[in-house]
Length: 249
Image 1 (cartoon, rainbow, N blue to C red):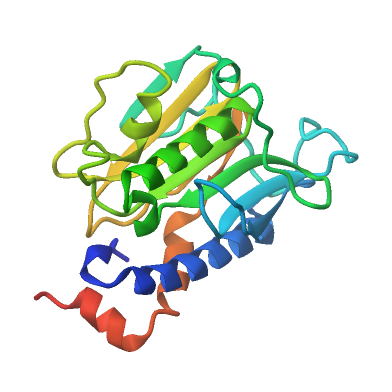
Image 2: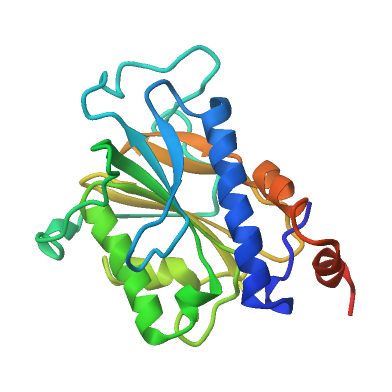
């Protein structure tokens, strides 16, 4: 299914889809995409990343996540199979020096968050303050060693002319990254080890979504099923609005 042009509908329609996509993606991850000991929850999180953040957690009193995975779940070693994306960036900047007084977002059950998936909403780009809050929260999470997968199906605007990844990465180090003009939407996975790594896949309206790496450790990831979960969430969009998004005019 091709990516739709969500600028053609009101933010409320995207919010409805966004909510369902978070749910479907969490269901897919909990349905066998994650190794034993990890689970996905749709959570309300205060701050720049906004509501409906998908947090992946491992119990603090459970077995080490490095002890392997159950049969049938593939956790990929970065050195053995680098993600197939068009651009890769790396920085050794220690973000703890920027946000040393901040703490990682934790679940009320005291299970530690190890990764976060965020689907960018129109509200995240609605103002300079909103975008700055988003960027600062992303930096805070990475400084705490929390890996990120950011999905931005909204085109760049005056506050992020080269997309959400550029807005984040330029706070880590100077970089000349530019989105290809024909691929203005951004999928970005971040490994938040001491060496910060970014894996960026530009996409466009009309493309199918690729599966993207979701890091559970600095050098190990699983693939997040973006396309299949997008399709499942699309089925919940009211018919009238599906027609609006699929029409040619």
